[in-house]
Image 1 (tube, rainbow, N blue to C red):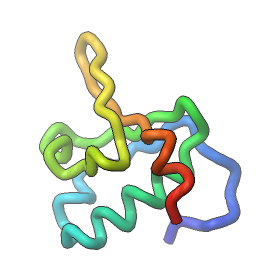
Image 2: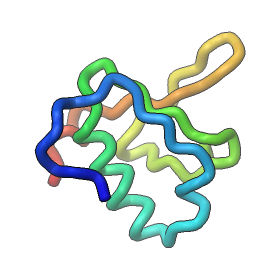
Image 3: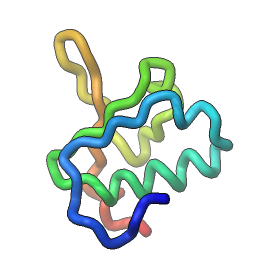
Length: 79
């Protein structure tokens, strides 16, 4: 379980997890991860999970040979 009372993280690596969760559980987990990231923190997922990552919560950030997600500022306030 992800603790509620921790210091914000700068990087979360979550590979091949979201694809095994229901859409509801994916959204719950992504919201909690967004609140757990310290701006300008990054969430890194497996390539297949780019389709799963919730674009209402995260922005896709492209790098030359990689990608990551950053929480949208409004999602940090949502509980």
